[in-house]
Length: 457
Image (tube, rainbow, N blue to C red):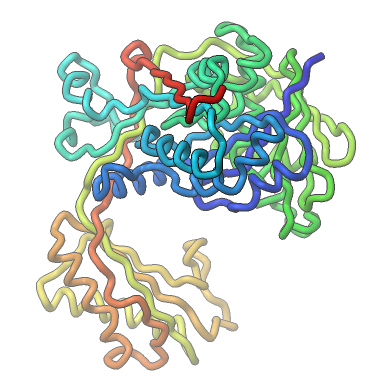
């Protein structure tokens, strides 16, 4: 039975720059997925594109191409990535430039588009598509004049079509994370659009791979059992035509692949486990069977799926005021008490100047004491140092900027032991808020284009 080896070397933009190379060098793989996008990543890319129309993609990917292209070509490995972000054509241009500089004429790069609906939002709203916020129920029309990006989640089909057209690198914008693995599997195994069980199996393979080393020991609850986490191997799925697959990693790498590491990744970002909804299929995670299959090998089988829904998810972002944050380190005896006093001083001095923030628009954190786990109070052995972090947000930029002027004075006009102020005054930054919604599937049309560098094939 034919087996396709799909690996993933990036779990987010900012993940290890060496992991993809290690996957290429550590043993045979057929496809390399690189997952750069998250909702916050799209917001970052949007801010970059507003400043520079040629930006808005994961620049790390271009550097990866420069480092890895000889190995990719030599090994016949094809790459599928969402590094295109909000500007996949600009990303493709940089990739083709890199290929030309390296002397690789004839590189075929596919671009998958159609996810960007920003220009069409007024038309869609006027046609009766409310695009209601999935958390609040509000229609998108309430913030339409402030929306700066809107991308529908595409599925695996356009990825598979790009591969069928001969693309050696497939550059996507907002496709689902799972599509980076499912697309190659649809292409290689010829799974039909209504082969729900196999599509669900490929989706689950993609879900296990999508966060990189989280399936191979990274972020594992029993971290003390993980060998050589510094050298953790990234995950590989060996997928058969019937949809069963084995999760593994290259030999000689750190980390581990066990039923437990795979199971922990399976419940990552999980809603209803019986209905994991994607553009391609509704996967039933309760049907999954996990079995040990040897050292660092876990077999996944029994996956069931159901038809996809009439909707696609829409990920939009909009401008929602201003924010700023600053912090100081407070040390010495009674550090927690002093940090709380320092926070009170800032808020009262601002109020004296006529600047006040509502309870929901200001935040006070004591990092080291209840910063991550609110409600846990310091015991008799209170820490001798703590980091005080203060943050605000407001529609009025002037108020936020005024807040930024009250952190530094704590060093000489606050309680003793206030140190560690660095980075200058906190600056007001625009808040880019997230708007999750649904859009009728028929309103989104994926587009595909494959470009060849030079004249080679």
